Amino acid sequence: MGDPVIPLPHPGPIPGLPADHTHLRVLAPRVLVVEDETSVAMLIEDMVSELAYEVAGVVPRLEDAMRLLDTESFDIALLDVHLNGKTVFAFAEELKERDIPFVFATAYGPGSIPKKFQGHVMLRKPFGPVELRKALMQLSG
Image (cartoon, rainbow, N blue to C red; front, side, top):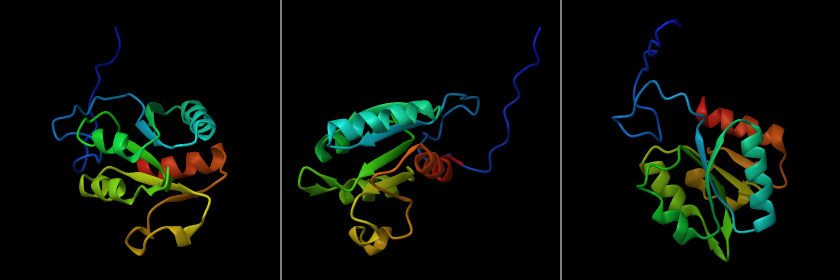
């Protein structure tokens, strides 16, 4: 007979989870990958899985990402800054309002991020599993 599971106290709401979530959730954080280049998305998906996070989904368009906002299907988002000629900042703003952590991924450097998001976690493309792990750890604690 094993020891009973005792929930650890948590100082407040966990970003990205509904208020009525269970503290006994032991699943890996679910990462939504917002990336329009299929080969890059597949590479990121593999890295996320190898880092023991769950891939919640991969979406290539801003509109697809926006439809997932209130689904509670992901805990963290990885956002390609440029999606098929559009920027991802409207989605990032919605995530920020919902306290859902996110990381930007861009080949253009910090100058491509608006000032209001300058303090946010950013990955410079191309990145590898070490950089991705560091960014996800910053977001998921």
